[in-house]
Image 1 (cartoon, rainbow, N blue to C red):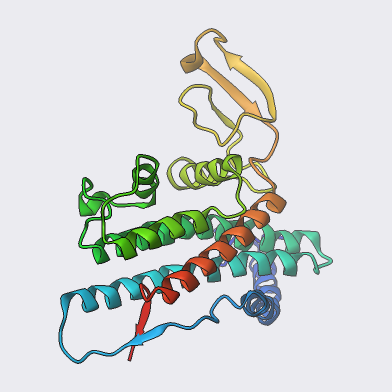
Image 2: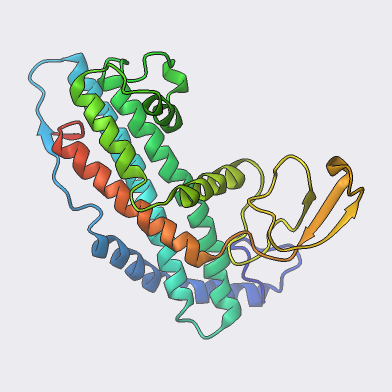
Length: 282
């Protein structure tokens, strides 16, 4: 039985595919119950924001409102994608049919894990840009607006605190610290490598092998563990290829990443709201 697609594959058994779709539809309410449970348990959308009223049109207020909308949207995307990945895994664990359970693990769960990690870094990048604009672009004075991202902010602060408005500088420092809270340096590097590999090179295999054969040069893979054999010229990596028999990463590791990032993202939102650098509009 094929669980791989909602769309009808050309050579699929039509009756079997339709039965599978009915099975999936029957599980959707439970999937959303588990999704809402994740959101509610973490209280990820339960924090106050100052309401900024508009009496006159002021550029800084408008930038604050526009930037706040963007940050809230990107935060919501990340939390909801993470919660759906966790819900899909929890649902799969309750299903007795392993093949059917694997649909929720390897398609819904894994897809949303990859999307969530990308969304986390998008949230960090867009929050950085929001603070940059609110500082009148003094937060990263040597960086053009189209090159502003979280990595630039990290680099800037390692070289010394920028001479931006004190309020924004202090907030940016707290933001940097909160983003990595409880994530050791090696884990943070793995998280970044996951995002870059999954975005630019291949779909990272979580509990399964998605890209099992590759050239040995260019630092293509997330890591080189699980190598089964190498063929080609061992003295020339551009002519050397390896076959791998181990998944890139396990879901238990990704779950720890997701939960740490969800906690940190909420802490960022609370802190920015407390500083009135994140607002809602009346």
